[in-house]
Image (cartoon, rainbow, N blue to C red; front, top):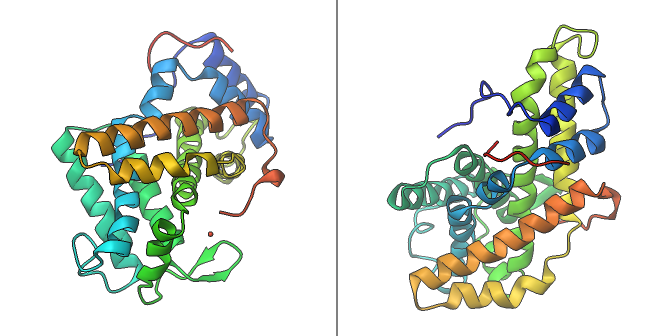
Length: 269
């Protein structure tokens, strides 16, 4: 799966307001992020936390449970390093997406977010927010998120990575039109804003408290029915994602973040 930046945003007043920011050469990631979130159609908001995206999150959470209870079982049984474990979880999510018939830009973004958040969760830190992806596999780190009631933190890692990538994607769809103009003279200028918006959105998402979801996450993973696990994680993801989008729309303050170990259009964006 992959994302395409050739699809343009809809021709609606709200998205035109976003493009006005690019025409003006706006470099403030908070303002650009706010305009983007205001422009999102309700259907797009749902797709961003849809069943396919929830499948990726559930795979990550299932990995934590498996590491705690059955570390020799799939998908982690052959993992020997952080990278191979993250790759195994991503491959398992890809398999589940195919079985469920899920295919969208947001599923592709979620797969990338799953890999990134798995690396962060598994890796011993080598500096502020810098994982050592080549370290030997410390399954205990992942298992502890399940054993010690930190599934909400693992969920937040995923949402932070996913929100970063989603907002970057929305910016990249239209910003290329303005490269070479007075607003964004170089490709580097456009890339910097795209990166800054993604980073800002992720930091705001990291400040949204998710501790209140821990019991529901534990219950969802413990459900004997597969559909119960699916729906439980999907419902939680939808609520948490809406909270993050609302925080971005409200001009959230990323400096409040805890470290983590408009007129909508009618159709989708």
